[in-house]
Length: 251
Image 1: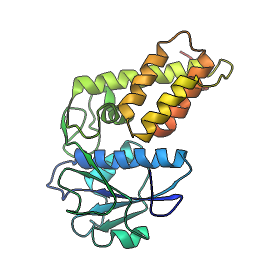
Image 2: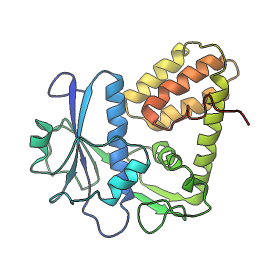
Image 3: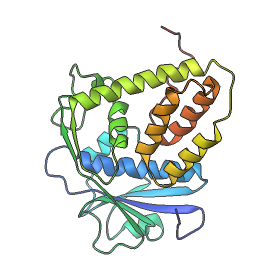
């Protein structure tokens, strides 16, 4: 991650003009921007993110922004149109994140393209808010974050209830496991695991991080304290609140 000013990374997250329905592709753009910011901050780099619109920003948050909040993304520093983005960021963006066709024709800096998202699920209502349904993800929006992170960011996603339900089960299981491991003496992350996480973070490769954690959760040869430290460290980027159950009464 190189920036125009040492220690500072300017990011433009480009949203499409809304057409009346929830913009889950835009939500994914904001999620990738959040992932980038978390990795950069882990490396000691300050991040300024602007949400950039093709026209004047709406007075209120659009559906993509509201849904991104539900998924635990950090708020952007500013909202602007493409002509004003450099001014509000204090300089040209180092990184542009957009779905295909939504960034400027010739933006300066690195361009990261995000695949389109289609939601075919009863977990969500007609807008971006979780519906009052019986689907598990209505209880935990971060399961949706897990699903979106599970796919390579440049590939399109067509989500259904079954995948969201599995993600809900995974987040619940990992939180219980992390709470169990937290009761063991602390132990450092295995070097191979730390190297794997660092490489995946540098590539913004969330699926690789999740695959590594899946294998680690099943590896009885790794001390529980090391598994706890690894999951807690990885969650600083994943943002799944994996330590949510630590200290709670056990069932």
